[in-house]
Image 1 (cartoon, helix red, strand yellow):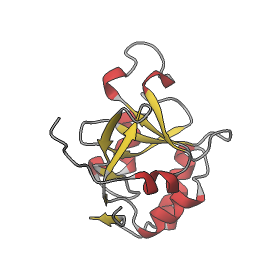
Image 2: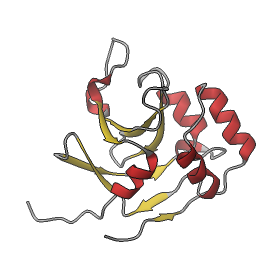
Image 3: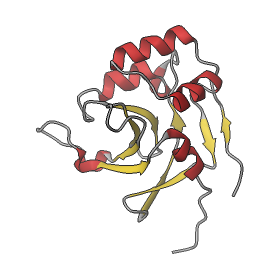
Image 4: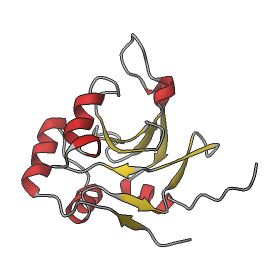
Length: 155
């Protein structure tokens, strides 16, 4: 198992911008995620692969989003594009290489759990549901610990 590195990060996040993000999402971010923002504020993990849907499928973390970051790697753009497309009480914290999201549950009963949001099964006309969300880890720390290096076994 290789040691986790965060490459191309923007850290540390400014505390006023983190507070602004918490106001936008109307929730307090979990402590382990706040510590990640304080040090890295986004970036690309290495290793970057994680499993979802009962370990049957895997994808990567292309990048974690950052506060005060311009463009598609920043929370301002991400929240503008995905609010109303993912269930209420969840915040996108990262994206994979295929346009899917890694989301964090901010509701009190599940705060901190990490889910994979699959855009291929996104609700079209109806309100967003959990039908295309897969539990990946029970905390941000557990999510980071579960990242592994993809090995192509030729299948």
